[in-house]
Image (cartoon, rainbow, N blue to C red; front, side, top):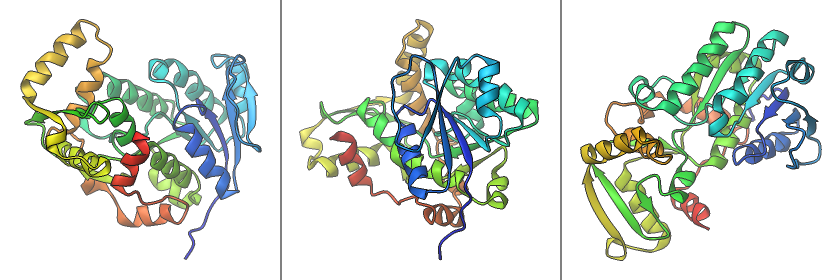
Length: 310
């Protein structure tokens, strides 16, 4: 039985990035939404036919007022260095013009993972954005929670696994399971959530929709990479390091201003038991089924890895 669907006016800021493409594609396929991509004047990114493109200063309240007025939802996908600077002006204007829903840059970890948030600066910044939306008291935020992106982390070697070099560092003591999904899955999940009837979407006001694909330890990710690449341990350079040593190293590098160390910490801490990287107990099967009726596909682990490594 097909799920009911609700068309909305949806405005995007930052939609030309890696998450924006699968999200907009999924929304267009549903055929019921009016989609607006908001860009800086100098932007050269293009969008599929049917997407309205508005260009202007993203700090200009007058411009944002004009393009956000009448929208049902605003979706924010800033580059990480602009996490605060790009989102805050849009959030303030969204409240001013009465946009009901803001989907801030919350397409990864659990926004209610207390310890994980406290120990990662990136997640502290994300929380400040959620807090601002709630403080303004007009719009409601919604998080599409999948965990760290499987494919992006593999490509960048941030899971402690470098498939191209066939090198892996296993973090001993960080052996809990973490939830994860691919970027494409996240885009489909976001599009499906944006298409829910109002009565269903309203249940997620200032809450998270938990839509991960996988629930894995670091070693299980390595095993899956080996299956996807037809390799075994003997084909890899695998080392083990005590997570306390790893933590000491990345904390020192963070103090020195190293740009990669915060992301190493981000991935390592997801595998620490009780820190919040494992939210499998929060995944609601009925919620997932409803989203699958709106275009969310189930992922196959080995296929997802093969696609990522192409």
